[in-house]
Length: 317
Picture 1 (cartoon, rainbow, N blue to C red):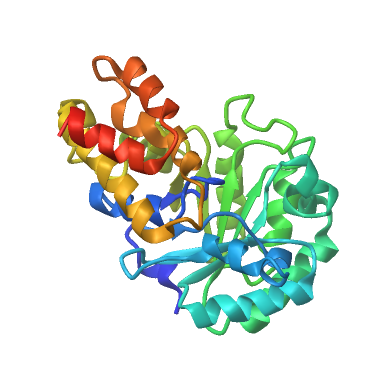
Picture 2 (picture 1 turned 90 degrees about the vertical axis):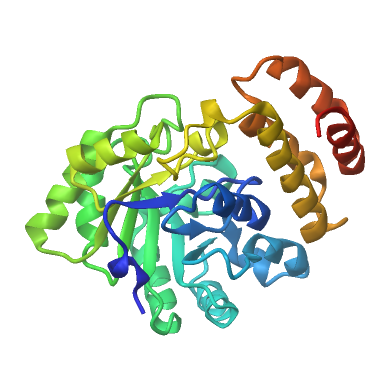
């Protein structure tokens, strides 16, 4: 079943963010105000079929609260994509996303991620392999405008010839990383190309979306079916809920949410994952509050999750 077609537009999508948007993070988003679509972290198909698969598969863990949820996978081997697609189907995912936009040099050297923008033959083989095994799950592609230069017309025209339900476009080339403003006019061009072809494939825009209102504005201005929000979640985890002004939430309440986040991390991962990855998320809860800098400095110096929980309980709650 193609869940994308049942969602009210503009669709608001949580971006997959490396080493941040795991099941714990997504469960916290549910408490704040859920996006319309959840995404797992960027997950290697090769890793899921390797001896270290138990560690890699942590990226695919989710709960019944996190629906609809899309498993995002990457690689360069169509056979491995097929095998992992079977895995995702059996795990109960609502959709499958193929990453064709990661700009990381090590990823691109393997002919993965954004490098597939210039390898149409391999891109087609991968999509075909996933489609064959996906049963009735929808397939999406997360991509960029090009590798070194903008290739919107050529790349989007190509993708629209394939059985893809949604194309999520980050409005920069791989070379640009996040160093320049996102080229939303190019995302708008992709929408125009789609409309000219009378294709049913959804176009989701991504890049420099700063707020709920900004997402709505960009959707209207550029005609996209939805907007994917990434880094702005870390400035405002309530971003998908336009009924809440985080500036009006007392610090004590925000710290209670942080404590909930820490405890949920403990419950979910135990010793499986190092809690250090959580430290970069502290700013979500304490930014723009009195004494935020000093408090964050204190929290990041604490060596264990137990110490952090204890400190918050004693000092603030």
